[in-house]
Amino acid sequence: MGLSSNQARLNFLTLRKDDLEARLMMISAQSQDLATKQAELISRKSAALQQFTNEMTSKETDEKVSFETTAIYIDIENEMALLEIADNNLTQQKNLAETEHQAVNAEKEEIQKLVDNNIKTSFKIFN
Image (cartoon, rainbow, N blue to C red; front, top):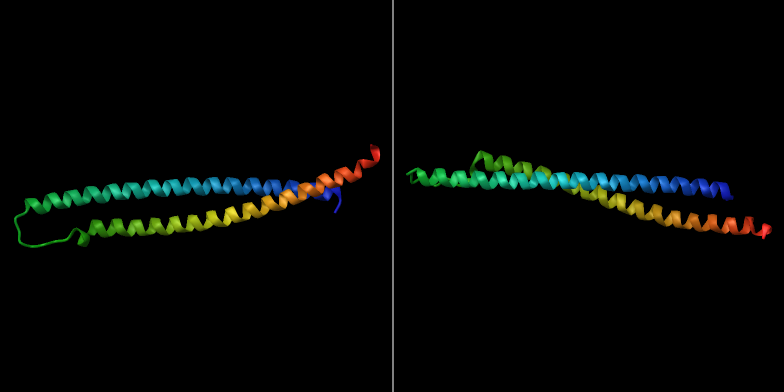
């Protein structure tokens, strides 16, 4: 390949690398958002458990009802499961993007060496 084609390839790889870095930042932001939602759900679950405990102690019944059987507990657990699935998907996307980023970076370094060698050999005549 010639100098211009190597330079064009280098420019393309630089653009792709920047695109992957932006994607990794977006994935990181989405992951932080999911972590915030998980923390909110845990807080809701704790508040619901506290309320359930207070209601059960105020009632004078022999009936034993478990918090795990309440509708709010089931809803929160379902939401947590959905968030975990979304988090796993983001982790897979992140791993894929990081792998591609490493490959692009390695190829970019190789092309940069080719460009440097082309410059040395092409312009050696003028020295």
